[in-house]
Structures are given as C-alpha cells and as structure tokens.
Length: 348
Length: 258
Ligand SMILES: Nc1ncnc2c1ncn2[C@@H]1O[C@H](COP(=O)(O)OP(=O)(O)O)[C@@H](O)[C@H]1O
Ligand SMILES: [Mg+2]
Image (tube, rainbow over all chains, first blue to last red):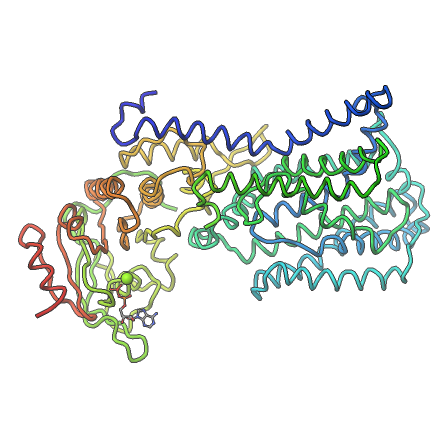
C-alpha cells in the first residue's frame, strides 16, 4: 500500500472503498445466493417428506433447465434493454409470432428441402421475422423518441394480433421429425434446447461484457448525455439493441415450437413478466446502467426452481406467484439499499 | 486520432493557442455577447468572471462549437476555424469539462477515458475483446500525470468523490491530448478540500503547457490559479487584467460596473 503515504488520498477512504466494494460484490451475487438458498430449502423438504433427493435427481434438473429455456432467452435480450434504461414489453408476443412463423415455414419447406434443411430455413426465417418488430421498436424509441414502455406496448398489441392472424386463431402443428427431435432429444442426457440456449447465453454474455456494444449499452443506461458527448451514436445503438431483443424472442419462439412441435401465438404471453422478473432478481436496476447476463441466468433459474419445486413438493400452484413476487420485492429492496449505500449517484 | 498521453503540448509555452476576435452572438433580439476579443496562450489560465447573464456561458459555447457565432472570428494557433459541432472542436483539441454530465458513473476510470473509442485485443488469438488492461494502465498513468493516485482502478467512478470525478473528466481530455480545456464553474459543486484539488489540477494542466479557460464566481479560486482575468458585463468586455496587477476590489467593481 504505497498509496497510504500519498497526500491526495485519505487512507481511510481506501478502507471504506474496500468494504463498499465487497458489499457490492455480495449484493451482485444475490441471485446466486437466492438460488442456493432455494435449492437447499427444497432439498431439505424433499428429504423430510419423501425421504428422497431434490437436487441430485437428474430428472428434476432436466425439467428445471427445460422450464428455464424460454424465459431465459427472453431475459437475456431484456437484460440488454433494461441496462440501456429501457424495457421491451413486446417480447412475449414476438416470441409467439416467431413460433407460428417457424411452424408454417417448416411445414411449407419440408417437402421440398427435407427435414433438416427445412428446420434450419424455418428457424432462420422466424428469427429474421422477429427482428422486424424489434426494428420498429428501435425506430420508435431511437428516432421518434417514444418512451420504450409505450412504444413496445404498442408493438405488444401489433405482434399479438399478427401472430393470431397468422395462426388462424389456433395452434399450428409441425410435421417434421428433425424439429421434434431438436425440441425433445438429448445429448448425453442434456436436452438439445438447453444446449442451444447455453451457447446462445454465452454469446450474449460475451456481447455484453467484452464488446464495445456492451460497454456503450452500460454507458447509455447510466448517462446518455455523457455517452453522446463521447461520440457514441445512440440512435444507431438503440436500433440494434431492440433488433437484438426481438431476435432473442424469435429464438425463444423457435425452441418453443420445437419443444411442443406446434406454433402458438400465445406461447410467450405468460413469460414476459417472468423475463423482467429474472432480470431484476438477477441484479439489474430498472433505472438502467447495471445488470449482467450471469445474474440474469441466476434470476431465471430462481424462478424456474420456485415454479418446478413447488409442483414437486405438491403445493398449490398459486404459491408460485406469491413466492416469485416476494423474491422480486426483496431484490428491488436490496437494489435500493445498495443504491443509497453507494451515494445514490447511479440513479441521477 | 491523436497519439495519446503526450504530457507536453506541441505549442511552445507562451505562444497564442486561441484567439477570439470581435465575437458577437445574439439570440433573436437578445445580444448575449458583443464584440468580444480575447486570447489564451499555451501554459496560461484565463478566468472568465461576470454577473449572471453576463455572457460567460455563451462565450465558451461559441468557442467549443455548441453555438455558431453571429459575427466575429475564432483562431486556433493562428488559423481561422469554425466548428459545426462540439465534436469538431474536440477533434481539434478544444475540450469542455462539464460539471456532472461528463461521466458514465457505472464504468471504471479507464472505461470512461476510452468511452466511445475503446481499445480491443484478441483473446485466444481470434476473439476480439475489450482491452481492460490497457484501459486500466492508461487510467493509472493519466491520473498520475494529474498527481491523482487512485488505488481502485476496477471500481466504478460512482465510488469516487466529486473532485476525483472532476479529475477523471479532466484526465480523459488530457489523455486525448486536449490543448485547451474549458471549465464552467469546475469547483461550484465541491467541498473546500475538493476545490483545492481541482485548483491543483488546473496548475498541472498549466505546467503541461495547455491553455485553460475557466468560469468562476469564486474570486479566491481565480486569484489562486489564474494568470489573467476577463470580466464580462451584459455581453461586453468590462475589463481584462493580469492577476498580478489587480485586486479583489477592482475585479468586483468591473463586474458590477460604475
Ligand atoms: N439559448 C439561449 N436563448 C436565448 N437567450 C439566451 C440563451 N443563452 C443565453 N441567453 C441569454 O444570453 C445572456 C447571457 O447568458 P449566459 O451566457 O448564460 O450568461 P452567464 O453564463 O454569464 O450567466 C442572458 O441574457 C441569457 O438570458
Ligand atoms: Mg453561465
């Protein structure tokens, strides 16, 4: 500690900084702590009431992972948007739209292209179609200065209507065995859709933590004016951001359609709020400027464990809502305490 | 992009860096600034003083490319310039330090210095990733250049005090080789010890041969750090003095008139 002798830095400030940084780290890890706590709780309950294990049962782990796939895919895109200071309410129905488009296109393409190519083609088309409402969101927010909450709420309605129209008001079954295998097959016990999701989440983690795009996203969420002054093209950034979140929803829709071998317009309807919850539980602030993909992964797992675990221990399913709600409230309280602790500057 | 982190400025001490000739600016019928002329030399600190509405902010905004002057001329190292945007002024070495708007609080010092022009490296030989080591190294050396020694290079700047954050904003300008730094009330929001640090910073900038223009209401600060003072009153120059040749009383008289 050569700094201690330096006249410009008070030595006490360093200790305060260290303590503060340590507490911040703990708070940043809160979602993982929640998760460990929950799993421990279910494990104890399971041993006492059934005499069996909760965690060390591969079937449980598989089920939780499959449960978490769609909300997590939505939540990764939502993490980027929330860090930038926005929110994307349209993701749920963009997901439904993509599921319906994937089903139709795969059915249409299978006779001509064969099973495998049709899946690839249909998946790609669905993700690209999902990028369109994302782009409209981006243009509304970036160029027309529409608040994200309002702009994406409008797109929520549009995507919902288009998805139901394309689906003809029902679900669209897919007849393609490769697609069914993608949705339900396993590689050494790990479901394919979990592998696809894990790879995608890693890419998103890289994008957020290691690239200029990610760095600019944090800066814009904390201080858009400073970002603009530093020469960052905020409009262009926001446009790409909302396209990205649309495409995340698109991928979620494709994997949903694969899992159920059917596209449904309402596929993502109940998942939107779960995705926002996962991001918040994962430590992001709705004021923008903070959050991580790894935190969001923990947040999504917390929700999946609560939902699956309560079914597993045979509690009335309505307890899910209460438990997830309580976890959200606790997360927000921790976030605010942390904000106050660090001088409240982050929300300025 | 300029070669970063050159502690010395290319203009020899004492030569004219910036000259403003007969500058006027009106907003519709409001004459915010009329026929103002002033110079800033390398290694010189010029204070701008004057009552509220005197035209100080308008003057620095004209110099930094925020406003186009209604008439008059700005010369940078003898060459006439006109800036279409603050970015153009910045590209030519004129940097404005804004009070609290300058930093992304959630990022480190290094990330703030490089915001918008982040250095990249290749991980595993192929994957482009942010070069955080380079950012931290630059943060450390730049802050040391300003005689600020920070131990926590991985902490977000929200952890730092107001004076330290001001230093980070100045550090960024210095790293990108700003020749002229403009500061609007740099000490206004700070406590007394912090104000002293900023005054020290300005001394450092001066010693490195940069030109500094700063607006202040605080005569104490002005007399502590400025070489010259330009007093504005209702958009016109009410007087210009060498600090060594004037007194608090005289400056106050120039400000209020009469
Ligand atoms: N953007 C503007 N539009 C109209 N009038 C302005 C604008 N900016 C400044 N003024 C006017 O110009 C005069 C000088 O203002 P300003 O440069 O802000 O003074 P100071 O910074 O010395 O307090 C004031 O009368 C102010 O009302
Ligand atoms: Mg002013």
